[in-house]
Structures are given as C-alpha cells and as structure tokens.
Image (cartoon, rainbow, N blue to C red):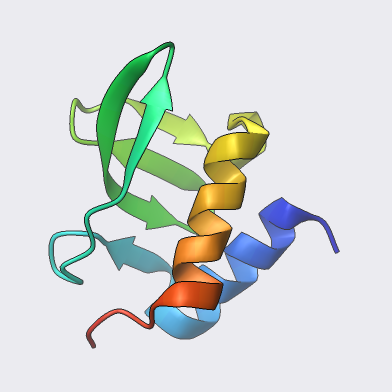
Length: 80
C-alpha cells in the first residue's frame, strides 16, 4: 500500500473522511515553495491550506505526505 492510500484510509477510518485541523486543535504546517503554510483540513482526497489553496493528495510532495502520515498515525490521536 502506498503512502497516499495509508493517509486516505487513516483519514476515512479515524476522522470520518475529514480532519479539520482547527476543530482537532492540530497545528500542522508545511513548506511550499519555501513558504511556511498552515494546513486547514485534510480529506481523503485533498489537502486544503489556510490560504485557500487545495492540492490533491496525489499531487502533494513526498515530504508533505510523510509529515502528515507521521502526525496522524504515529504521534497523536487528535481530539474527538
């Protein structure tokens, strides 16, 4: 199973298809083109950033996917 599928399955199973970072009190930030941006929400298909930009999980870079995977699966079970 590839990393996108792992993230997709975790979001679907643990967060009912949508991890809303504000609601879950999760402060997730990544660098895009050298600029630090906050993630607003992660669905089973897309990542939406605070600036309104939405990127498909399939189009996201490996560093972002790895970071998200570590946050949602290994470190923290966010607040229900």
